[in-house]
Length: 508
Image (cartoon, rainbow, N blue to C red):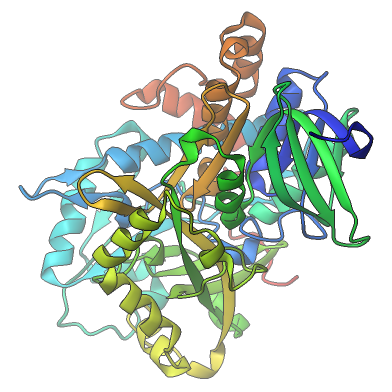
C-alpha cells in the first residue's frame, strides 16, 4: 500500500520524458481541457536532450518525399506507396498544428524551428534507376506529392544537386527526384518552445532530474510512480489518473514495469547512430538539399544514407549518414545494462527468435561500428565524389530502440517504426519505436487521445477545438487535392515556408 504522506505531486496526467511526444500530448490536452493538471518527469537537466535533440535525429521533416525505404517494390514489380502516403499525410497534420501554435503565439517564431529545404532522391545503376522511375510514376499522381519531379538528365541533375553530380562517373546511369516542398525541422528547438509554453500555464509542473524507477496501479485506479531525484537522491512519489510514457528508448522498461497485459511480449533491439559532420563552411554553403539514397542490403531502414542540409540553432550544417552502430544502451545517456534488464519471461523467446532471424543485421551493425574514418569517407564519396577527408568529423547521434513483437509463426519479429501501446481502460499509454517519430508526432498523439480519452474525443467541445487546432481533423488528405492545397497554403504561410529557404545565414 502507498503511504499518502510520501506523495509529492498529484495530477490528472503524468508525462514521462520531456521530448517532442510528451510536449505534443501535453499541449493538446491543455488546449482541449485547460483545467487539467499535468506533471512532466524528465531525468535529464532540460527538455529535448535525447532523441528530440537536433543532433540526435535526422530532422528531415519526414514526409516521404525522398525517403526510399517508405516505398517498397512488390514481387510483381509494382510499387507499394501506402506507407509513404500515410507518412506524408501525417506530416501535413503536424504542420497544421505547428501553424496553430505559431499563430496563437504559443511557441517562438517559425524561423526558429522550421525551414524550407528541398528533398531529393538520388540513385545510380540500372536496377535502382528503374525502381526510382516506377516510384515517381506511382507517387506523382497523388495530391500529397504534387510537384514531384523526375530526371535522368545529368545536366538537370547537376543544377539540382551540384555537389552530388560534380565529377561523377559519366558511364554510370543516374536518376533523381525533386520535391521543392521539403522542410528541415529543428525538433530540439520546437520541443523546448512547447515546454516553455506549457510551463507557463497554471496546473503544469515540469520537473527535471527525476528518474522514474517504477509505476504501479493502485486499488483506487490511480497510478503511483516512484522516482529518484538525481540532485537530492531522494525517493519521490507521484500520483495521476493517466500516465503517458514518452521516454524514447527508456519507454520499454517502464512499460514492462506497468504490468498491463497489453505490454506482454514486447522487446527492444537498440541501434545507435553516427554522422559525418562537415567542417568546411564553403562546402556547406554549396549544398542546399536533403539527398536520400537507397539503403545497403542488410542495413536497417533507419540507416538510409543521406547528404543532409540541416539548420540547427539558425546555422546551416551539412551531415552525412547515419552510420549504424551496436550498443546495448536504450538511451544515449543510458546504461550498457539496459538490454539485459529489459529481458522478461514473456519477451525472452520473441527477442531470441527475432535475433536469430536477423543475424545479418547484427553482423551489419557490428561491422558499421568497427569502420574507420576512411571507410566512412568512402561511403560518402558515392554521394560527394570530390569529398576531402579532412573536411569531415564524426559525431554521435541518438540511440534508437526498434520494436520486437511476439509473432505466432516466427516467435518474434523485428519491426521498424513506431507503435502506441495502450491499457484497455485508457489509463496508460506508451510509445515504442523510432522513425518517423517526431515528424508524425501530432498524428501519433491523436492516436493516444483516441485510445485513452474515448468519450471526450467524441464530445462536441473536443471535436470543435481539434478542428480549430488541426483544420483537416476528421478528413483525409489521401486523394483529396483541394484539402492538400488548402492545408499547405495556410500552413506554409503561417510557418513562413513560402520562400526559397536559402536566405538562412551560413553563420551562427
